[in-house]
Image 1 (cartoon, rainbow, N blue to C red):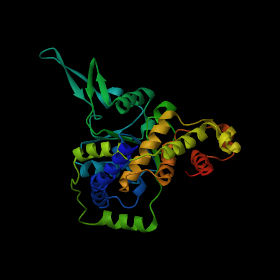
Image 2: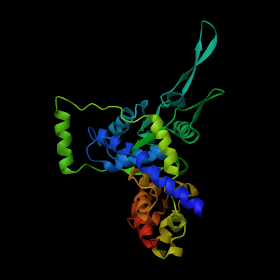
Image 3: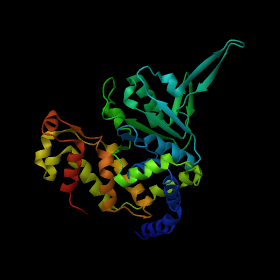
Image 4: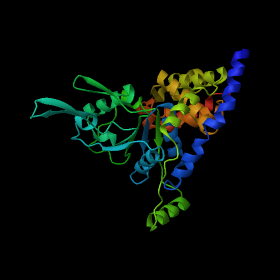
Length: 332
């Protein structure tokens, strides 16, 4: 018990220094990203926990600008892949090219070989392309012919979906959606923020971003995030939330029982714990509180709960179900 206390004390001493760079990232990104703080928070959470982000929002809400700017601030490589119905897996991961002169094959790597990858309108590509991206996301490697190539570190995929235009799209299977650590819903900016956006875009001197944090710093911070203290009470709180998605009746929310087709998988438990640690780290804390768990529950769980037709008929969406479940769990 004494050694455990010493370990927590060591983490307390290190966390403020290790998370100081977060303010530098926010400060630099604020030059071009107006408002949308929760989108930036989600990107940093994914970056610090080696997770991937699924963003949903109408076009023009700075989704592309956000990840591109983050790549600039961290001096990382960036690529944007526009998903279309005629896209092939080789367009994503690369292929082997035959050299006629010497009769040999050379490997041409695809755009997925970057630190920050924007998969724009991912639901417009067929299943084969989505599966190719899945290996990259899960295994952090790509297989071309018989060779396997590791992807750069860090490796963050931010996929976007347009919630309005669904004609001609290929909905993501639940198995692939579950691979995304967070699903973030992006809404329109506030009135004052949009006024600032207009002025910024009409200015003759657009802001220039500087690289303020190295990728090595991010790599060290990832280890520090895992050291953020998660007490047994917090573990049980997380498990109560996850188990409530599977059996709401056992947690006093019987009315939700017929509305949920399936609950969150163990990957949901792991990701909620990791996201809560990252949330605490970003806020310069060395321990997880119930507020950290509650703050991350919605983006971690909204895409991991399957609703029945009855839920849709009654006007329920995943967010409403998750919020009711969270509110039914007593705070530790």
